[in-house]
Amino acid sequence: MPAGPASAQPAGPRWLTWPNDTVVTDEATGYDVRITPAALAEIRAEARRGTRLRGPLVETGGTLLGVIDGATGVIFVDEATGPPPDSLLTEAYFRHGLDGVSCHLTARREATGNISRFLGMWHTHPHTAAQPSATDRAAMTSLTLPLSDAPARALVLIAGGPDPVWHKWLATGDGPHLYAHLATRTASAAAEPPPPQPPARLGPLTWWPGGYATRPHRPVSFPRKARP
Image 1 (cartoon, rainbow, N blue to C red):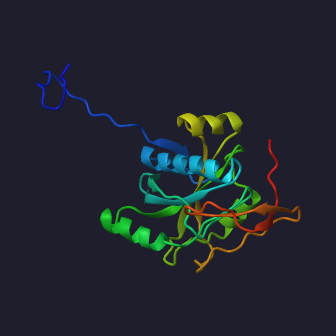
Image 2: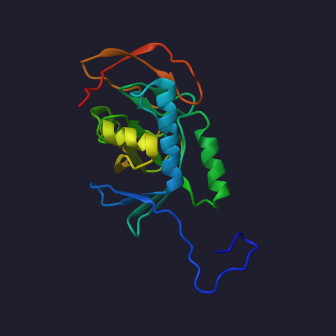
Image 3: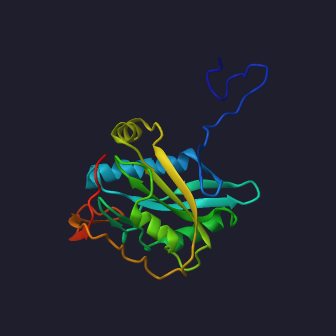
């Protein structure tokens, strides 16, 4: 065995290897969503940080960047970010903020030769199924995105899972349950994400800002999620 890069290399073929992408299929459109290890690691890192900072049940989320290949039916997710500072995070709802999003997207487009672009948004459903809630489905019906030049379609990615799956992912990185859907924007992009429309069953919840804030803010009224 060679002792290092400067040592003599053995004769014969040499193999280059890299970790596989995580693949989840959008059952509605048939698109395969390929998430790079780096993007999924960033989502996990933010979920772990959120658990330590805000508690185990508070949702978090952020932006997805990459490219949609319509010819092959594949969506490549090569980067994920955490929640902007003006985001709203609660145990029942995640609202993506605006601060810094456009600047980051511009920087990534320039750095990748206009290849990696805004894809959509991700958020978590800690300790619960990776399926859209009623609020999520309403948001996908008239998709409003956190930028003025939003594309006509955007990817919605949810990471979740029951207690054993969720705990194992946070602890070891063994994949969570994932839901992916390429939603079509039917409403024009607004300067600010619309407030959620909570059902009649309400309960006060504390909300947290995104970014690196370490204190929660005032209570807001949202329905508490039923634990399975």
